[in-house]
Length: 289
Image 1: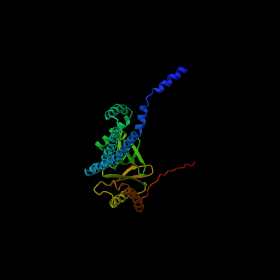
Image 2: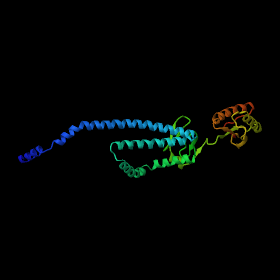
Image 3: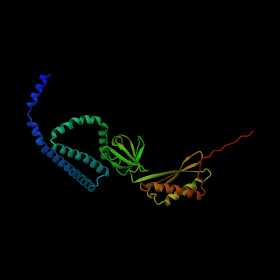
């Protein structure tokens, strides 16, 4: 035990304290140098963020002047945002002594693993590209996604997702891969939209008179496109009514307001013409002995 302590004491005496002294002497200078580098990196990051915002703004203006689709503009903007921020972070990392080739090698090797783990996201990216190229819909269109029956007005087409706004102002976020690989209905792709109404009248009412009233109503409605087909016909003979079909065309902007107004005016006009609007009835016959 005594021998061990003596050996340890001798070893302690032989230690070269010049290294420790040198480290303590250079510590303030190194700390100051590191602080300056961190401060410069922070300033460079803030300037880089502002430059990225300015660059994105210029790209948006250029695309707007070129009459690019809104969805294309949103997609390119989000792609530029991710790419430029990645470059900015890489440049900041190299300023702290990280080798750029090492970063690229790490990203390359990690890219395979990330790609396998994020197959869905890559599918959404490819779906976004297909949507922008094939244009099954654009920003402003009202679409119905047939798989899950999600519907709304397209407000944004981003890299991975498309955002819809429902009539009651809910936001639906749909993966681009789902939209690209499933069927959907674009309700407002064409500038005009056909309106079809079915009105049941009593069997005791005169069919010819009812058709004349409804056809006259179509002529009087300002929102009805006069150069498009307007037709009133007997659609079916139902259990409790004769179903009269009414078809006409509106612009997309006027569709709902004109449809609601036309339905209301149809009720008033038919009642003034002594046409009875039918409702479900059940005739019961009692047999007495």
